[in-house]
Length: 335
Image 1 (cartoon, rainbow, N blue to C red):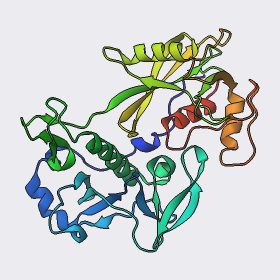
Image 2: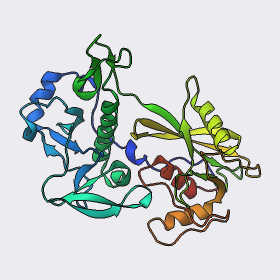
Image 3: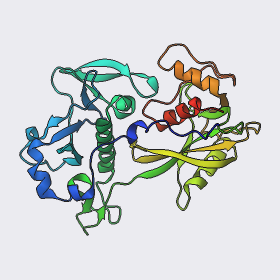
Image 4: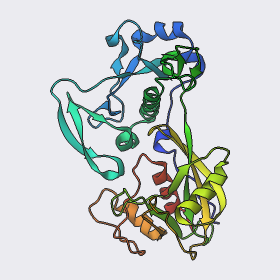
């Protein structure tokens, strides 16, 4: 019996093992006492962090190398196996060269390399990390973006100082406290009405993407809007399709700069005309399950995957994206 498809695995950036509960970061005596045995995740100005070449773990540094106590800009990430993890700004130093590696969407990028370590970015390398490292890197990246946007109080405009070891800010004028924000966004895999899971999936391409790059549809939740209402509105706005049977699949943090992607699936009539939103969607088309399966087989190869709808190939979303997990689960399901 065919059943509705579900995600086969956790999205890459949803994996985490560390304990990050508030009672840990609001206990300065405990954090300071464990600093000498803690580890530090470095992030450079572009959000890259070092890993040993070929490794699935972050190349975390010894905290004691940065002083006897946490520096003012240190951010507590959590505890794992009795070790505290922190984040600090850093950059490649010494005899730095570059190496080419596959980045987001499979695009080849040049990244810094020094002393057997490469400095990688989260989108391109997140899927190659173990669960603990993926969670640490994602959290560090999210807090880094927030710190850059939280320098002034949103109530009175006065400068702010970080408190709770990077998890809150307090303004100098009135003492207002603010906390890291997360913007909810829906991402929806729309399939047709054939069988339980459909025979075709709706893919689209933004104008700024190169030819061949496609993904499922997504958009931000608006004020006063439910998640299901957002799914229905975004699909209608972006491609003119009306959806039914909206169903939740899973979620993934997406700290670029501060989103949480809430994954859904829905059904739509494949015979109805698609109307791509001007300036937002360059192209939208229905793609068969066999074509999506072929695209997965060809991922990372030079051979393009032809599409019956007229495009020359499919370039699937990057391995760190929940969109790829959703598409893989749908492709592996039975109609």
